[in-house]
Each structure stands twice: as C-alpha cells, then as structure tokens.
Length: 248
Image (cartoon, rainbow, N blue to C red; front, side):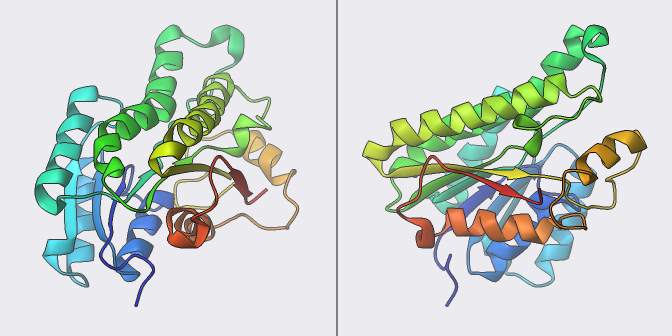
C-alpha cells in the first residue's frame, strides 16, 4: 500500500531532470495517478514514454502547457477533471531564474521571471481550487527557493522577489484554505544538483550558494521530493502554512 493509493496529483515543470520529474516518479511509485505538465513538449513526450514503461496508461496524463498562461493552465486542469474526476494534491515546482544586475534588469526579464516563478503558482492554485474543495485530504505544495530568504549578490532580484512572493502566497492560501480543509506549505530548496546546474551560470553564483551549505555537498532532487511528498501526504494532515528548507 502506498501513501497515495487512489489519489490524484498535479505536478508542473515536470519533464526535466530536476525536482518536478522526481516528484512525479515518487508519486507514481506510491500509488497516485499523476497529471504532469511542462512547457517543452519534446521533453514531456520523452518523459511520458519513459513512465509508460513502468506504469499503467490510465494513471498518467501528460500535457504541454506554459505554466504562466491562464488559458493553458485552465485547459490543463480541465483535462485533469475530465480524466480523473478529482484532485487531491497540487505541486507547483515551476521556477525560472534569469540573472541580471539590479540596475540593468529589463522590465521584460522581471515580468518573465515573476510570470514563471510566481504567477504560475497562483494560476494553478486558482484553477485547481474547485477540485481540491471536493477532496477529503487536499494539499498544495509550492516550491519556493532559498533565494527568497538568502539571495546571492549575483543578480537575483527578480527571482528572489518571485520566490518570496511564493511564500506570501503559501501563507495566504493556508489561511484561506483552512476552513475548507485545504492545506498549503512551501519547500525552499538550496543548491540542488541536476545535469543543468552549472550550464551557462557564473561559477561565482554557484560558489555563493555552496559557501552557505551546512553539509559539504549539493542537495539532490530526490531529497527535495522526499519533503514534498511528506507535505502532500496525510502524514502531514495537521501541517499547513509552513516553510521547509532543504539543502541549505
């Protein structure tokens, strides 16, 4: 018996080698049916094909969607309702960081980062809310970032503001959702290793986060997924409005 037997989960930004993809794998392994999306249709198709080798097709729903686009998010959640007729867990793992020194940050970069890293969480939560209201054990887990609390000095103004906004959204949803039985918590990953971690990133930026670590190693996506699944599961049924840092 898995912790998520009979339950339905939605995960966005879920086709890469990072946290979202690992969360999907863990949810499926623990019995959930999972709807997952990504902006890259190519990566999403490849990931869905991989998962279909080990899990029944009726427990999978993959849909390409821009997580910051209201119509596409709405269509995705409509597809979840049509396919599974319920939703118990929403996991918002979308994030985009475009480094730029504050005085040189263009407005379009600011808006793009906030759209991907904050507005996406709002849109998914709003579209999922009617389905979550029908669940006896509804939960939302938002993936924020250590940057919300301890940003680097290497041009993270947009990202830190967006991920700080995710924390505010989390607390507001926890407050508003309590009467309806919807829990909402946030996870703040530090430096989490994946194959794209250092691609095109200033080495000093990576070093600034490594210098903060209490343990002498980078975190791994699976370690963040462990915490997310705890917060999404009934094991944390009396936990809401909390922030958990992983890999700091």
